[in-house]
Length: 266
Image (tube, rainbow, N blue to C red; front, side):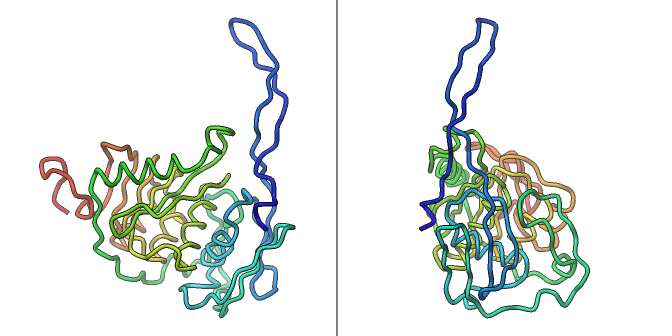
């Protein structure tokens, strides 16, 4: 049913350049509100790309602390009007009244302060090679035509157990990561792999990966200072400016297999 919601529409534009001007039709990504409910109770509304909403709903509730493991989730339904309902064993995520407004865009902009202070699960010692990093990037960016058609989406892809599992897109970088986390919660992706995102690695982006047990976090751009601090606390491998043949590893290079003359000791 979720595919009935539009992903883009056309808009008239007037292009002006040194050689003159012309009128053209451009495809514009549809950003729209989607309600997320837990056991029929509305939790929040997020501005998203209406695609892969089952994964988004599960990942959204994980980010807010309402679910934490796949066993919590019983069923996810999506209606044509853009409402995602997750039926789950609910966690009490509101026993800590102090919340933090994050730097993120989209609907996951508040987290409980206790999420920043609690212990993280042990990080798996997964491995990925430079060649596999390249495959992950190509799989993430080449999985859809929406970026080429609208130039208005972030993407997030996942690699685990020696292969590329899939990628998700959204108008918000946080939403794309939530969809990957939702795929793990719905048992569509295995745990303990590597994630590649086109977005910045701010505190809440890294925090979600630490809590769900993703030990390798790769970004096309850069981490923030708090994002790096969380990666160090959780002993995650964190890399920025990632390209098919190079990457800048800010912490725990031991999980990236490359020539020893390239990588320092962990």
